[in-house]
Image (cartoon, rainbow, N blue to C red; front, side):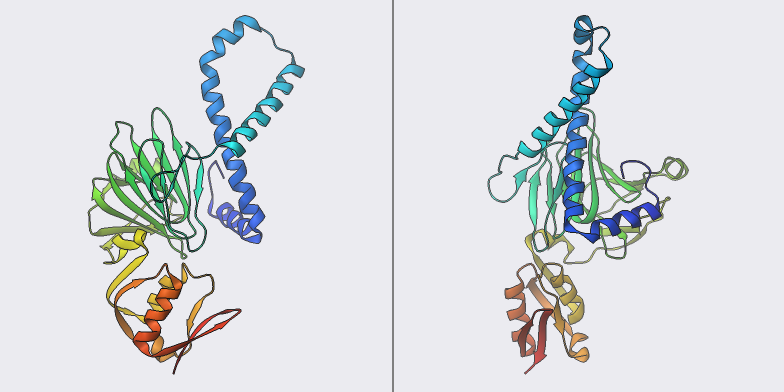
Length: 311
């Protein structure tokens, strides 16, 4: 998954991840091992000349032992490295470290360069910050990145698209339909294709505030469609969702991104009724009470879900 990713490979990879929680844990663990190995490799190059003066022709056996020892050191670094807590919510992130949230969790991380990444429920990003560049890839879910002002370019990638900026606030969401939505909250940013051939053929698109660009996750050439931003999209890091008018089933779908059990409206006619207001969708109990009060419903809990019924 660190080379060229075809659509077939991506599908096989996602199927493998879904087979067992242990698969995702293993992938996250070894991603950190590889990332730390790259850091050691780059830092080791600075002392290469000094080492050569002492050992001009190392034996094959010694090289194999050294590689094994380095792997053990890297693994020890990986499992012992911990972030320094930030005042309030969130933790500090190390360079090239995957950051993950569980279902129902909204969490903020401070990156090494001072940028802030807020991850929505069930989200994963990969961070790599070097002396020359800053890079974040969203692999699934939704993330908001507040990019710190820095001379190093900042690249925020999802699928085959890359958002380029030096200072600004950008949202990236990968939907269940594998459509990527990119939204500029503030600052300046451009959207370009990660494919060299496609990027050479098309100029990067400027992002505009209050407008979102959408493209397919697997699109080799980014042909994004612009649409007005959803009014409530700016508030999602707080766990709140505000709508002037939205069908109840769509609002329930938003709340289900945070609920441990799916919320189901049993009456199809009721599910299509419009609702307006401000809802704490990240707090399932508060949300259920509000909806039940608005529509005079009762809440029935079963092992397979939470069912809303008319009284």
